[in-house]
Image (cartoon, rainbow, N blue to C red; front, side, top):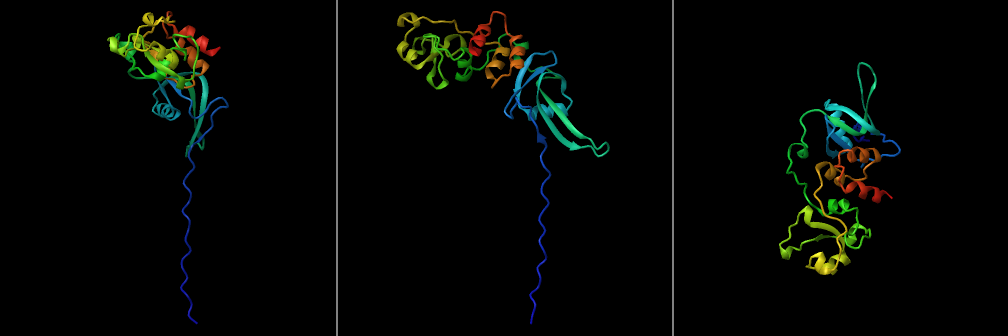
Amino acid sequence: MTQRPRHPKTRKAPPPPPAPALAPTASARLSQQVLRTDVAGMPLEWIDYKEAVRLYHMDQVAYTCGSLLYRLHGGTNAKSGEQTIVDVSSIVATVGHSYNPGTFRNDYIPPLNNETLFKRDAYLCMYCGFRFPTQALSRDHVRPFCRGGEDVWTNVVTACRRCNNAKASRSPEEAGMQLLAVPFTPTYAEYIYLKGRRVLADQMAYLLAHFPRSSPLHQRIRLWLQ
């Protein structure tokens, strides 16, 4: 009786090492953004936790403030046997050159889009004064395109679709509609706020300190938080 040759037992490849475990605090989520500033404290941009950890690793973080967002557990040191832990705060100040265009350019104008425009106007229709969800809002040109109006911050306001249709290609005066607030161009610090998603209380307070005292956003943010 012939015996069949035995096949060598296949060995399963060892599982890959587990990825570093991210343990956010109870109030934080993976999508929560970190506010990055320069060493002088001027707001620069929003970054995610991965970019923040990279800055910590590269010794680019000069100091931190705000609340603890994430605690990242890394590898174990072969000599000390201790595990690397990186705490990521809600606001991190970084060393090096500042890339804040609002610092060295007096003529800086942030890019205009509906998302930041609606947030600038606190999601209020600047004609009827009611607040609407994003899908019910539109960009209105105070001086219409067909009358030589430009698509710039100082000529656009948030309007509900009903008011925008009622105004049509007329000025507010011609349409018998009162403009509730004068449109304005946000500063760089204000624009950073407008771009933020789910801005935390400590981040909000930090950014507000960099707004001009005359900024309409002070009142609009208080109104939005009510």
